Amino acid sequence: MKTVVILNGPNLNLLGQREPATYGVQTLEDVRQLCTSACELHQLRADFRQSNHEGILIDWIHEAGAAQAAGQVAGVILNAGAYTHTSIALADAIKGAQVRVIELHISNVHAREPFRHQSYISAVAAGVMFGFGTNGYSLAISAMAQLIQGEQRV
Ligand code: CA2
Image (cartoon, rainbow, N blue to C red; front, side):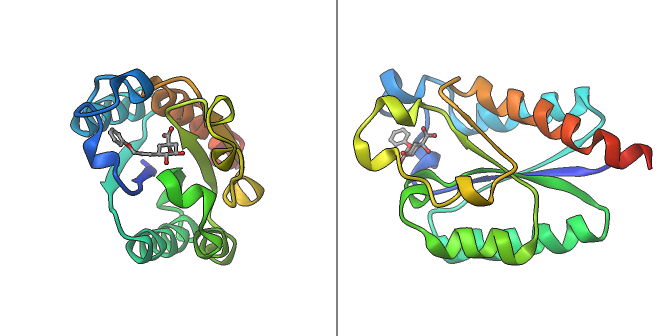
């Protein structure tokens, strides 16, 4: 059974506590449980993490790349939070680790401030999911399952 690594960046620990109009009412713990259930439906395991620190996210991407190469990890679902719009280092890590990434945002970033329209992650991602609220995590897990389907048959 392969693992989907679900990485959440800065301030996402505040989910469900503030800004419900933008991010909904579910807490990060609710999202973790949603991801565990969605992974089970696809015979996958969820490894769900959050950090407010860019370097830690980079270390986790490297770790996921090595585990993907070893056949243990399907890929990463990455909500990099505001680092999406600023971090060349995260993009370099994804490219360097050769890890499969689905970029995810809870909100529709393109309906928000112009600075949120820029993403350094999109260019190195297999796909992007945004604007579906926290249900986007479940949709991204389905997308990840489909992405690796051909690979698993070989
Ligand atoms: O829509 C998303 O998922 C974002 O990645 C969330 C980031 C934001 O900087 C991106 O542009 C879009 C912000 C995460 C902060 O989350 C909070 C949740 C509740 C209260 C305060 C912040």
